[in-house]
Length: 102
View 1 (cartoon, rainbow, N blue to C red):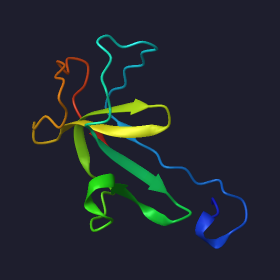
View 2: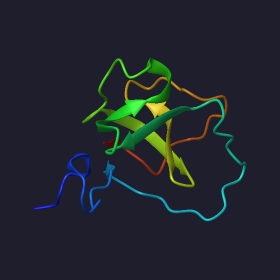
View 3: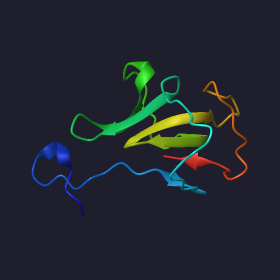
View 4: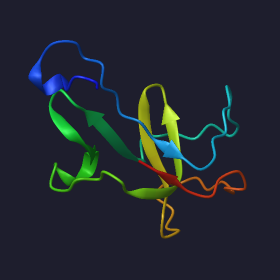
């Protein structure tokens, strides 16, 4: 059993994103800017739940599902919501994905 980082000691707990399908790309063209996308974050030292940057920690996003997530560095962003609403300004055809959940 892994130790919870909120109790001190070894910090061996990470946030995981469960995916139905993953596409790895070193380069993506056109480059998708992430500054207009909603950021998901998980920091178990501060809070043991997934949060979204825009809701001021009002909601817990554990087990939420999304059609398309993208990563940039160590950050996770919502590109397409589960209900099909596009959250960004650049649209790509999600031919390679069915759904993502965290």
